[in-house]
Length: 474
Image (cartoon, rainbow, N blue to C red; front, side):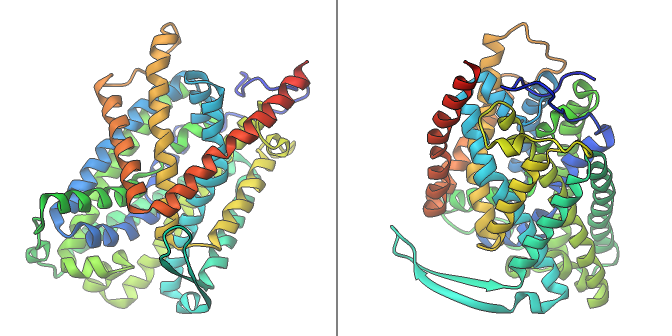
């Protein structure tokens, strides 16, 4: 078996991960991660902040193109460097070790934990539709935010511990083996895609919607207000699209990476974009625009509009399964980043261990699951997603910058796939990613600043672990 983990400080008697994910599992990771809580929850938020159908659709299309441009760029990186950790490996090699570490630090402390926690929070919201007691407040805490002085209400319900329990369950499943996790991912992805397409087909075929529901189609505000609304809707859309990069993190476990990376990333992103546009169309057809904007369970409300509450129950159940699939993929791929860093001596040593029986990064899975479960107890779905999008897209942009630099510094690197439209396509992706992060910072300065501070705090640990690694090497 070929070597698939970066060289570490102590390579002797080291267990490596196995290439146990075939083409179906690779595609399921891309599609299954993207199609999850976002498509069922974000259309309502996008309608509320966008204010018109055209702004919502512009956000879906722009978000889809931006994600596709990113996927095409990451396909080149993944095919050329199929290593555990994905972006950690690309940034380390393309921009330098400190950049790779800062991504890994962000991902392991802020990014993946908030991502998994927000997916689990969305799952809990779906479940509360069937079990209303989950949404009943147990206690609340009223306080003033530091710096801004704005009042804030923290409400704790049974949904938060339910979300934490889901994280623990899927951490355990992925602990038992990557092939098991891959099979679960394929099954859940097929189910969730079938559920979404069933809503679309039934909504248009059996629904009693009206084309007038697409009003207001055009924005009724100033150009500056429209731009602000578009950027807010785009941030929500990009959460729904997020997940195309998860495949790169399990690069060392993908079979035939030079072929499966481009096919899964590009094909999966295009398929998801088409599904999202169709789903939004049936939402606006079935419900008035104001009804979509005010709905917290859009898919269930759409189904209930033409099939009654009984059918809505079953589609909500399918949405729960869909969210579980996204959570499974997120946990599977996310643990590979702290694992790869620990193998380089740049993270907590326990996260670099491989279970001898299951050949999975057991220490990294437990570490990640603990952080995510704790974060799931602290926030709501919208708050957690905004924190994740801000932190993640900074490094999506930097990873593509690393691809540009590698084209110059290592022109002879074997590249089984080269990004289509280079340099325009990756350049547009970098510009769009930077614009998005700046807008999120303006819209949510407190949480964004906290996320940035947590990223920069990694510099202290980088110096600490790098010093230990150099001393061990001597």
